[in-house]
Length: 163
Image 1 (cartoon, rainbow, N blue to C red):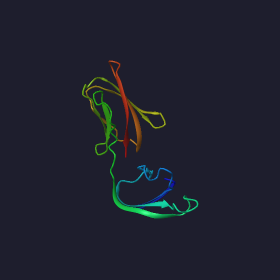
Image 2: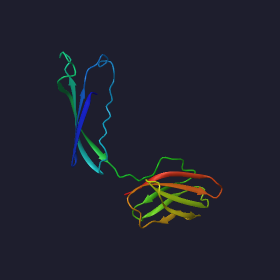
Image 3: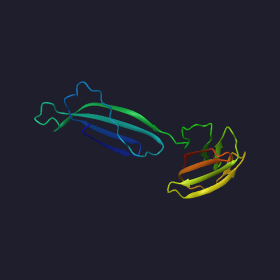
Image 4: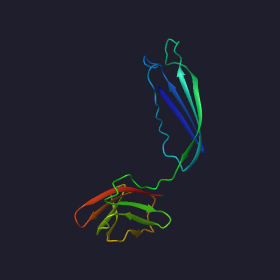
């Protein structure tokens, strides 16, 4: 890909990709990755247009003409904030309806939980035992890092999102 541009406007996305032919253009499969940034939850209509530069031109990277296009639906779902981590040691996630931290811990060990904001400041520290729901009525939206430290010295950490 020699360049790309994209426009996100309300519920539609238009992507244009420009390829400049090189010596391996006919034998290489190409995958383009385009960073659309953070999108709001919802459904988007996408139009993708692929341009190829002109082979016959003295400068094959000058000028271009569309060679393919596609229209697709893109759906952005809300994140739960649950990481794919080893759940044997425990995982923490935020339940937005009940405004609680949920600790899923198969061992149900005593210990403590510490929460940090993305700047590294501790925002909460609480002892835990078999209590696996912690009320957090004043959590601000954002990304949080947690660390569970058990009385036997084992620990686990991860992150979750509050929306």
